Image (cartoon, rainbow, N blue to C red; front, side, top):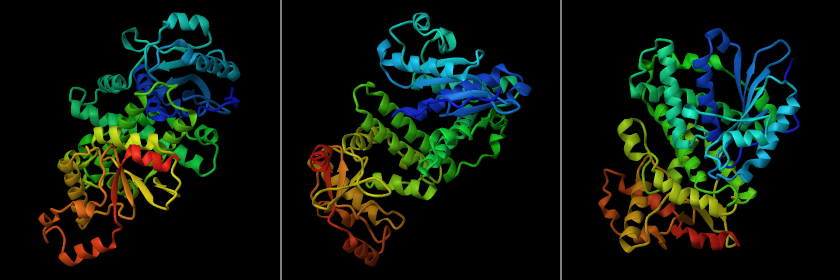
Length: 429
């Protein structure tokens, strides 16, 4: 029996596809552990089509769903928060018309009602049960569970490295990238005009790909800029997911959730060059570099800056009103750009951040958004960063030639730092 077309599609929530993808990866790894290699070769993983994710089996005439999974990445523990979603999953199960399909609901937070109580009220679906009879799995816990499954698979297939945490970490990054790359590709097709359900329906991943990835000889992996870029992308997504989970589901409007989801999809769609430019533009006070482990450790993303400044700015201010990117133009035709700058508004902080921005901008290899009039910060205000940075004489000709420095400075606009609350009043009116 071929898969049936359903009346609804799974649309990622604002905290959506990152946690959803990790839960999906965990379930895939569970299948690799519990099935034979021949059985694995018959199974495929589908995301964002029938449900948040679905496991299907190859069959003549089309793939047959084996299990369908809805994932809810919210911190609410009340039954009413999820009731409509439970019912929606049951309705989708009914629409499939295949009694053997299992419908699972994955909770990130333990519900006030037990698994048994919920399943009495919603008999067509099951609350997914994790190890040790756990009825939910937090974002922090899912990473641990993924690694535990990888260790078991390595032991099952007698693959070296199950007792090496670094090996397990590398392999977890490899298999997670398989899922995230597919999600990004599906969303890119959607942005190109293809309905997301259609894009997702036709872009499944054979489970054998994950097994083959875990058999990779990691000694051949090169820890170069491409490798560290992948780690930074993973961190960016994790910071975003954790930021989202700090809010209750009903705290924010649908429009705000949709806006934030668009941002996340946009950032994940950037190619290598654009991604590095993006990182530098939101961190104008630090040179972004990750060619090796030392630079990755010292010069890559900072978690607190991203959560306390950058994501807060995107959340608080309306959707961008400029094309092809992030930023806003106010009624006075001034351009505002979000940053991860989380310095206080004290005199020493204003001076320090101004000097760091100027020094970063004068680096030969770095370009920061000096075509902006205002760089938005968490709370720091500086009327003119060039004037305020009165110690830039410490930047010598070793950093940049005098003529080149002079050319760069004269090409800049007057650039100011503006705190989020003030920027909100100017841009949201």
